[in-house]
Image (cartoon, rainbow over all chains, first blue to last red; front, top):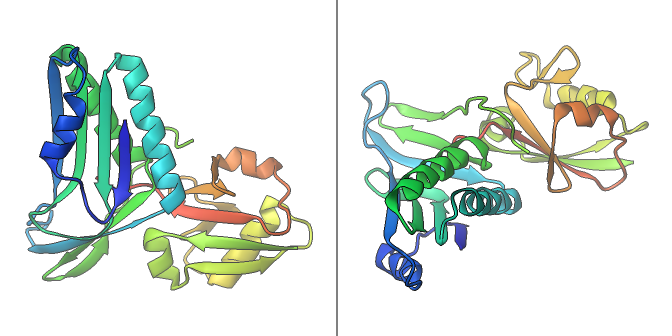
Amino acid sequence: MIVKVSKELDPLPYLISKLKKSPEVGSISIFIGVVRGKGEGGERVIKLEYDHHPYLARKVLERIVKEAIEEYGLIDAIAEHRVGEVKAGEEALYVLVASKHREEGFKALKRIVEGIKSKVPIWKKEVTDKGCRWVRGKLRGGHS
Amino acid sequence: MRVCVRLYGWLKDYFKVGTLTLGLDYGSYQELVSKLAKNLNDKDGLLVEGGRLREEEVIVALNGEVVSLKELNRIKFKDGDIIDVMPLPSGG
């Protein structure tokens, strides 16, 4: 398992090679979060600025991935989230899950991504050609 | 006693402060919230409403552990405690 919250993501081929090590792997599902270049009001997004709680972000991310591995019987999983400035068009989040079969991989991938969005203490500010605004999170169940 | 309160995300921007030190006499949640609202000059009630932190807006961690607002009601803060007041996550 790899979890990382930092300014840079590891290269995808490297992460995939890490997951392919077990002979049991029959499926690798990947989610790539990309910074949209267009805001909800049609404005041009220049970049996102991510703030985070360094200790808790990593800890909560680790717990989410660990729980998904156990619940879906995954062979392994990786989640990496960028923080700091991320320009439009760039990749901000990688989640990769390795499983025997695709079904549990798809479900686990969704679970991890949703968990990251609702539970990991990371916050983004959208910087556009018309100004900037913090994206407000929504109350979606427990945070502990 | 003195505790350290740290703000994150939009809270830090809105109140223009990231870290503040509060002196508490009793160490209760009510005292913390009252002093926080006063120190931050939260006149619009964005963080504190009716003597409580707005549950629909923030999560709180005490010394690196997330605690529910219900649990906070029962906690007696100690000298040197670090209290993180964080907006709801919006990463991804």
